[in-house]
Amino acid sequence: MHMPPERPRHLITLQGLPRERLLALLDRAQALHPVALGEGRRDALRGRTVVNLFFEPSTRTRSSFQLAATRLGADVLNFDAAHSSARKGESLVDTLHNLEAMGASLFVVRHGEAEAVEELARRAGGSTSIVNAGAGRRAHPTQGLLDMLTIRQHKGADFSRLRVAIIGDLRHSRVARSDLHALRALGAGEIRIAGPSPLLPDPDECVGVQVHSDVDSAIEGADVLIMLRLQRERMEEGLVPSLEAYHRDWGLTPERLARARADAIVLHPGPMNRGVEIDDAVADGPRSVILAQVSNGVAVRMAVLLDLAGT
Ligand code: CP
Picture (spheres, protein in one colour):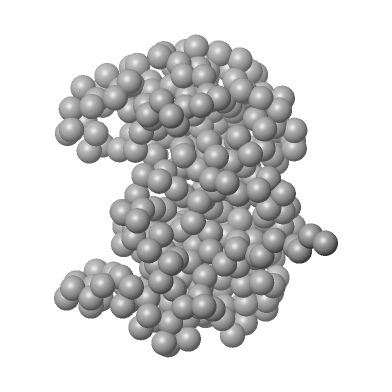
């Protein structure tokens, strides 16, 4: 007799996540969409405390986890890392254990070091769940989920028909890695990546992916374009000559977008560098689904919190 697989306690990466679990999270997020946008409230997390433990800046992820938890009836603690005893040298694990001692059991963690989030998952108490809200360059699983939900809403459930291009700084992008894991799991028909060669991932991360050395061929006939933020420090590191050169060679302009299918959609995880990787006319234009991504972020984070809470 097969025992049902044990429900995972944490969400750290989409790598290796079974397709069925990924689809179940997307279905649940879709069903929660009206509640996510404030239509009524639910009490499913009443009595639970969610801690936003962010050691890097965030607008979308932190705010949407807060709204998701609040609209499900949870108490939310937005940990203030800049004014915490972490500044006096208290370790991340001690910080976690002290907050657990106050009755918190769901931790949403963003950290510049992927290993830090993974260590918290290993060291957490038996009734604690950790959600990765962005870990180094390695993974941003809820962003991957909300990107897939947005694509599914606009393009349907059959990903095998889709040509998806991810463009920009893939090497340093945790969003790109989580999108690649999810797109593979959902059986995307064609996955293309394109960016300046110093900003491409290692070859072992490109298995089953078409690597394009120019942006126009990556866009040609695509159904979905995922533009990535140019992390400006890459210019200081000498990996990009100038913002103007990047825009000229890799920026998504209306003229370039015309190479994609007429019904193509454009995603960007935010924050955007307008006029660098994407023009205003595209970001605010009819093919942009960037704000739909943001709305879906609340629904996806609700689905993940409920799933980890076992409700
Ligand atoms: N997409 C994303 O993670 O945005 P924030 O950094 O604002 O959370």
